[in-house]
Length: 162
Image (cartoon, rainbow, N blue to C red; front, side):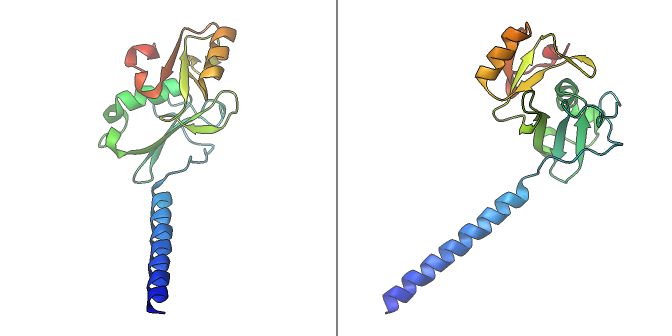
């Protein structure tokens, strides 16, 4: 009987710890913010609500955020964060979201999204990096829109933003 009680106790503790760690993990994940009518792009100053299919966001660990009217401005901000948000560093970033081209849904910019450069598709400020969710979609987009290059998040460089 003591052995069964011990096994039951160990199982109960294990389940409790699993639930606790799961809750803590979820609490640390920042979800995309809902764009407000008066949210402005941190780089160019445009109101972003008018461009829901291009919105990008950077969410910081402290809950503050920066929104952008397209991925290109989001990368400009990301590369020179101190210029736009003195006191903030890349290490303060919790999440980065972009609006995926085909689904118009927010996706994690650093995981699984590809950026297609040099296409005939114009963002709110002209030529932009177009976020797509798969390599197959990127190749189709590239062919359909005369694009030049497919990049992962960490492959995008300042010179790609011209």
